[in-house]
Image (cartoon, rainbow, N blue to C red; front, side):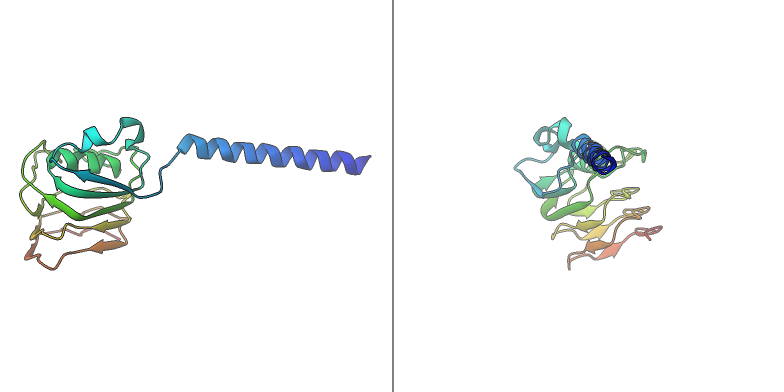
Length: 174
């Protein structure tokens, strides 16, 4: 009789643990497979990703033109808003290899705007959740403080055409 009670207690405990784990996973509901967005017009990324998915995407590839409006959203998805404050974003892998940065749109950080083929100053500042980033093939310059405090960054793919890297671009990257 004691053995049956122990076995029943053990099974009850196991089902409770599994139930808690499944509730945790359902609550997080992270999207871990790569999401590819083909942008035919810069500034439309916020229209292409539903607000319910914005903070759940962990792996994103963007093809086409992006401007300050798009970069602002990418920053939010990567855990940092346009003033350096934290967000609930979980984006860790970002592939911009087939993207083209163009001028225009909103400011992406404080009072900074995008320029053609430039990773601007403070572009990814404070995006500590990013672990892997592939930059656009056509960029020529990386601005000051662009990746400062990107402490989670372990992989960065730079294109061959970069001619200048700004001051403190990679400071406080562990």
